[in-house]
Amino acid sequence: MVNISNGKGRIIIRNSNKNHGHTLTLKISGITSEGAGISRTEQGVVFVHGALPGEKVAARIVARKKDFAIADTVSVEEESHGRAVPKCKYFGRCGGCQLQHADYATQLKLKAGIVRDAMTRLGGFPPELFDGLKCEASPEYWGYRNKAAFPVQDINGRIATGFYRAGTHRLEFIRTCPVNAKRLNEMYSRILEGLEENRCPFDGYNEANHTGKLRHIIARTGINTGESLLSFVVNGKLSAKSVKALASLGNLARPDTLTLNHNSKPGNVILGTYTENLTGSGLISERLGKYRLAFDTASFFQVNTGQAEKLFSYASSMAKGAKNVLELYSGAGSLTCWLAENAESVTSVEEYRGAVKMAARNLEANNFGNVRALCGKSEDVIAELSDKYDAVVLDPPRDGCDRAVIEAVSKFGVRKVVYVSCNPATLARDCKILAGHGYGLESVRAFDMFPQTAHVETVCVLSN
Image 1 (spheres, rainbow, N blue to C red):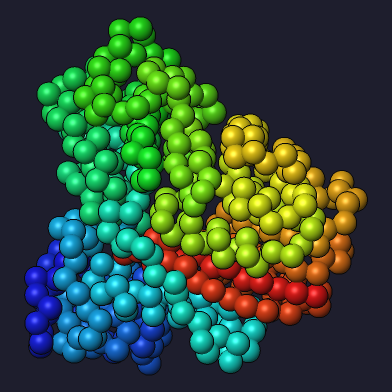
Image 2: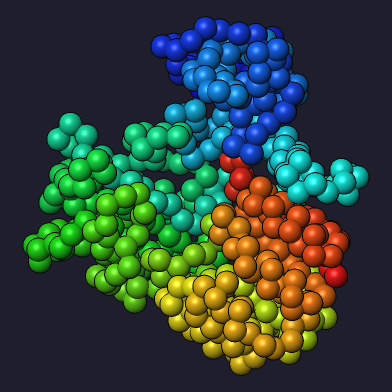
């Protein structure tokens, strides 16, 4: 769904699906955490893609479920003041962005609302706690992403790449992406040229039958350093001739380091466990504040460098004053550096051994000797800890914390919990459990880590 115009009056949406259902006129009262408009009708709730709160739209039903229906916007009869013309011609087909049809000020309001809704509806917290909640703007809201993963498929006998369409694993061919950093688009453009010149020695991946060699193309860059990394994710073993051909294709993009990641497991997990370097060290670095941090093909690193600086600065300031800090889900040590600056000691826990090794490297490079890095699942490691901590910092993946982690934190009797989350729903769930153990919600701040999408990062502080 892409706007042709955002002038006053009726807005026509192209690319709407004409093969499903009938058209309804709907009033949009809210927005989901996935960015769809919410319309409450006598027949039930309808989730409307491409619609904004306050709008009246003509929408076509594309799916019916037991308790709700899903619709696409066909035209906007009464538009929101916050409606904007999407910058990307692939918007509505590519699944990467959900909110390009809203101007940036509106996006920030919507994301604050998503956090507020989750914390009140799912977490059970009083609405008045969130009266002043705002979403911290990103320093850049176009060209901010420092990482992109492009799936590769075999389409009608030709290798093709792009991004997945929303809610599917069907490929949308793209040539450039306005939320990706300039260096990523440059590398991707050169790779496309090589593919179109048939420089790739084999076919793209077929997820249905687990055939085809080239699965993904991963591009990463340091926004502040200018360094770049390119990786090809391949299925199965490659001949020396094939490796040489891929290296030649990669060199068109001129990355600082070029790697092969081997992933022979069926399914949609992008990376395998083994990565080999073709050129360069296999690492690139980025500066966050005064810290220089290295990362590799598989390392987790926040995709929005400028906003990560603001997020880490704030989260670490919320733990300031704590002498002994426990950090769970610590990754490659990005936030750990900020915490170690203000604490006498930090115990960091991370499940993935490669990330623990990268964290040790980063901590040494930034002259921190007050961190004990432990490798293991947080729920397992925390059960064995007997030290006393003044604060616990949680930064889990989208699924949130394991229940055992929350229970163990409460048993520690830690005075302060700083919870960094990329999923308001699991954040609300976990904060509700902590509240049940006597923790009060002290503050909530939202950060727009992913402009043009419906995703939002949040930092909650709870105290006992």
